[in-house]
Amino acid sequence: MSSGQRANPSPATRAGGSLTVVGTGIRPPFHTSTETIRSIERAAKVLYLFAEDVPAKWIERLNPTARSLKHHYLEHDRRTEVYEAMVEEIRSWVRQDLDVCTAF
Image 1 (cartoon, rainbow, N blue to C red):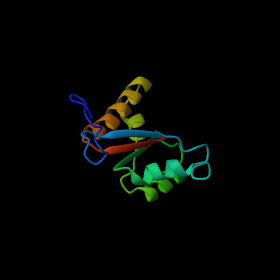
Image 2 (cartoon, rainbow, N blue to C red):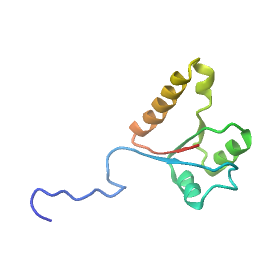
Image 3 (spheres, rainbow, N blue to C red):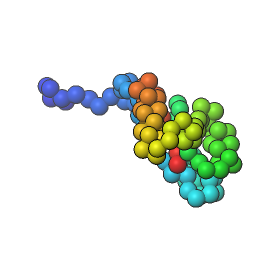
Image 4 (cartoon, rainbow, N blue to C red):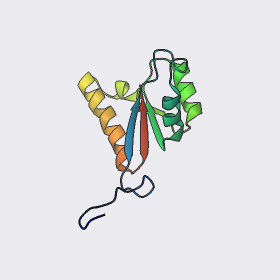
C-alpha cells in the first residue's frame, strides 16, 4: 500500500451502523429467499412492516429484536408524516452503530 492510501476497515472494526433492506415476498416465509432470512437472523436490530400478523410472528421468531413499524400509522394522520417517522426510526437505530435490517 502506498503512502496516503487507507485500508478498508473490516466489518468488525468499522465505525457506524449499517442498513440492509430486504423484501420478504408476497407470502412470507414461503416466498422469502435464503439470503433474506440470513440477513434477518444476523441483524442486531430488525424493523418490519407487514399487513398481517402471521409474518410478524415469523420474523419475531427469526430475530427476537424484531419490531414493527406499524405503530407509526396510529401516531400520525398524514402518510408523509408516517413515512418520515418510519425513516427516522430506522435511521435512529443505524446511528446507534447497529447493523439494522428492514423487511417489507
